[in-house]
Length: 456
Image (cartoon, rainbow, N blue to C red; front, top):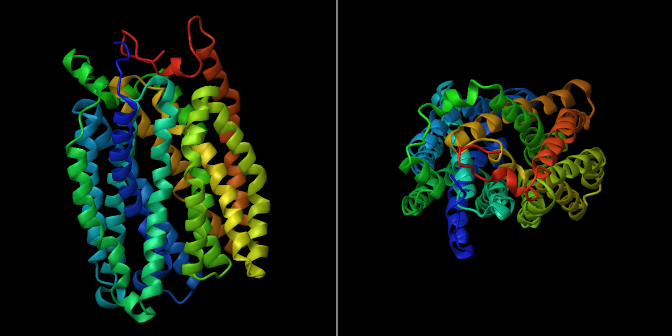
């Protein structure tokens, strides 16, 4: 099967836009919890020790990552069997229902232990939905994009993770500014969750109007769809090599940098440095907004010089910058220099974009189209569990146990060492081997479908 992608630039803009809206919404749903961590801790996890309460809140955040592989097992093979489009319509609905339900929950004061138990359950449901969403969206864009521009187009989807958090932060901040503290604790915190309902409806209608990818359509018409994408993904050493490369290289690097620069940064500012939520949200929102346009730039760079090289440079620069950046943020907070705080966070966010932007194209290029979504999902979720989901909990625990406010970022830097090694000694080498084959073009040759329906 030859690559038949001939989608026009305007067509790609519509495809990326429609995919991004849904993905951004799902990450918004997921990150509203993060933006409201302090409030939800008070309402659902009362404890005499605020440190214990914060650790419980971050553990609830991490538990949702354990549910993501279940979503991958359920939905990713579905995307490879019945279609990319149908699957990410279903996952959008799952996320939307769970998010709206959180906004309807009674608090601990009203329902006792039922309140945190129900919150935990709905976070798990969110994790299941998100576990099947992102891979389907990435593959959908990949299979429409010209091979030479896959990095540019798919990198836009990477930016939607941070944009989703940006929208959550802005909305929560606006509510806190416009409502008094009592009103916000009474019902204002529910608004960001409940607003998902109309947005999910609109996003679902947009996705229903989208067409299936040309690659999947040709596989279906030619009878080449896999009978069991899940088995095809887990039963061969070649497939596991691709999963391990993506997990410990691209996805691991992305999970550590993103969840340290953005998610743990929230906990660090609010819990460790005692910065109020609104000021924290504003600093992070500005940094995310400035960094967002960098994603397509780094994605396009990966089309020219190679995915692994761009990610490797981002990992190295982030590791060098992280510790002094967090130390500088601490000093700036003590000096009430919020411009400096925002500027430092922006630097980390831009370096995170360098690591994240090439990831979707890099991982999808490791798997054949018959099991591409399943392979992507496995690699992403393993990387998130091993490197990202419990990073805030571990980092905050280290700060609490050691008394060192910078112990958490030290953990992140150490966590990146295997990602650095895998990307340097395996990722770059395998990418170089593919692009130096006779007749191969730089970077994009790895992502071309061949007559055998596999990636060479």
